[in-house]
Image 1 (cartoon, rainbow, N blue to C red):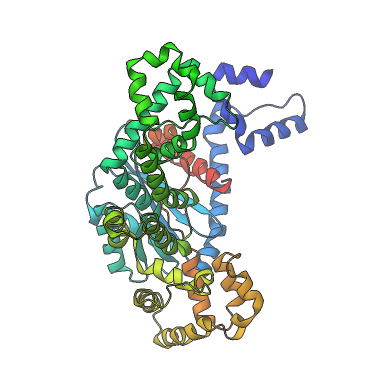
Image 2 (image 1 turned 135 degrees about the vertical axis):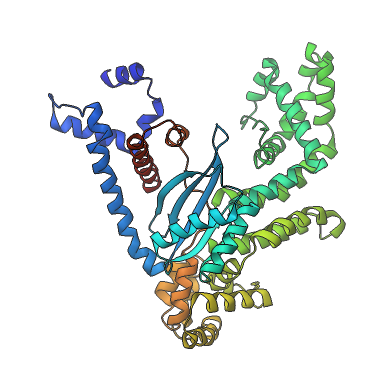
Length: 480
């Protein structure tokens, strides 16, 4: 009861017990036994925070060897807080883990590409320019311009927009189409009617296998399509109710609002359109949830586009409105040399008989990556020569185990184990395939970030809050 009393007295959120450190804390206190003196207020905010910062810095320092061996990605996670401030969180990703570096209030400079680029340069120099392979940011024009400026200064660093953000924008554009807007309104009317009538909801909940309907949200991204999928899964239950004697004999059947909902539920066109839209967006939502590593982005987008064409039975007039959105977002924004090269270097795709590795775009992108990441021309030529060894499965690639493992192993680990017959490409492949395609770190604690960016604080308190955010965010990343 003492723990519960503490939570109630301090209004500490109950989910604090879900922290991986909660039970550890309780165990340590129990091991010491009665009489343990808890740290004082001032200790928590001064020397204990300082000690914890040093502990986190040691973890960050341990990542540097990975940055040197496998390269790393700088992530600029731009977002807007509840006070409408434009904040940027800077993180460094590598295969061992992600490091939170700092958070800045960029409200005054967010539209200035030159100033944003200077922030990128500072972080690149802190990490080491030879260690940075990739820069991932939002899709905004200001970030794109800053990314281009950074590439001019460091040709070996490749910029690309966040793949997850690009997928969200594609879903947002599809969601603005008239057919989707009308379906969303129909789904919302059904959901509202169902949950506003206890009699109807009770009847439906008795159906075998019933699950709650997902409510269409106000967001412009995946929520609408998840809600449409949920409605589609309940089609037969809903139609069974609105055609049942129970409903027809009830007073609800005389309700004016009910007639509109019944019309939607019994409209075969509504359900067929729902099925098409859910089929179109399903591959995109799955990609969004999986947040694929860079070796899978190119193939994922290709498969999503191919699936859309198949849904419309390759009738260009029907699929073009959707694929034109892909063209605007993927072809013009996200499709980059690093994604195409990662596709070629991923053995899961090269050794698939339906691969696209012979496309001119793929090979041109690979050559571009070789010439920008490797300055020694002799090694550049060796890389090009070794492509044939990899493609034709010669040397270490000829092992049956290498082929069998090509789809089950992580591609960078596959190269580490089986790539010794092409040592120059091996090094390049490990660096490219070890990168991420997303710019987001982890769930943000809004209150912590809002306090750090409050202007009315003295320098000492501001530094203390910076340390708190550094410790907090890196703990969250470490335990993710």
